[in-house]
Length: 330
Image (cartoon, rainbow, N blue to C red; front, side, top):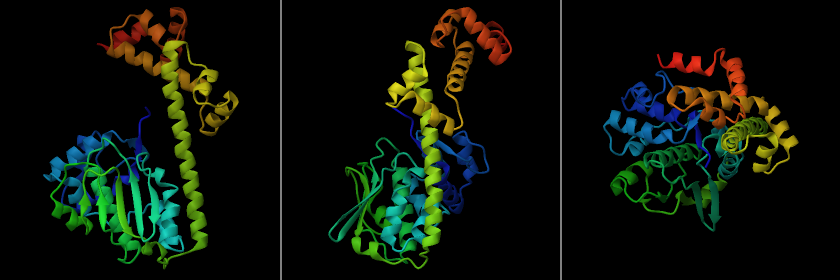
């Protein structure tokens, strides 16, 4: 199963909310192994959410930290998806545009819009196994943003949350302006479909085209990084079995080898370099963190002969595996 990731842009408003609540966000960042002073660029493992929210709850001394921070979230966060909303002709058009690129924020947000008669439902996805604080905060952030985009006309009449245990009912009404339904089959916002037709005062077709072009480029970059990560994972799996070749990895991805080579080139990497990098990192880890015999490490890194492994390792590191292990354990 692939590792899910979130863009740091998804968490920057939370950092702002921590600061607005009177909590030093650096204390939270340090506790999750991040440098103080703000979040780094890029994406981070979604699995880190649990540690982040525990640290935030401890620092704020708030059991219902997602709802607590939702009260302090700014309406706008400077995200590209917000500009897609603003430059679209109607709120509904903006929402549909933004949903095409929601993966820019997180792999877990399989969001979609469902409209049935006078009722609309914004499904935020399943997000099974995540701390309840993340979807509770996210629902509050979306409601606040949508209310600002529609000049206060967006008013949900229910928020659906998958977790069965949460805050007291009145807490949700206070933050969301509507009841929350716990134990639902999905995370979703239910609202009057009429608001989808509300015209945007900031509609600008030229800006919309520019924002969509930028969103497409950013999404393509995320997908390229996805491919590199998948190839690395397959290299690790295949190396132990029979050695990882371009043909084997391409077969596992159901694409022709030539196509895989071209897509990796577009991502700025070569297949052989990925294999070499994986072998080198694995060899270093096994040498420093285990007492495995060199013969075992040779096999696990996909080499057929110890002599070949020794020559390769010396080329990578500048010293033999025995020298590297001895120096690393001093």
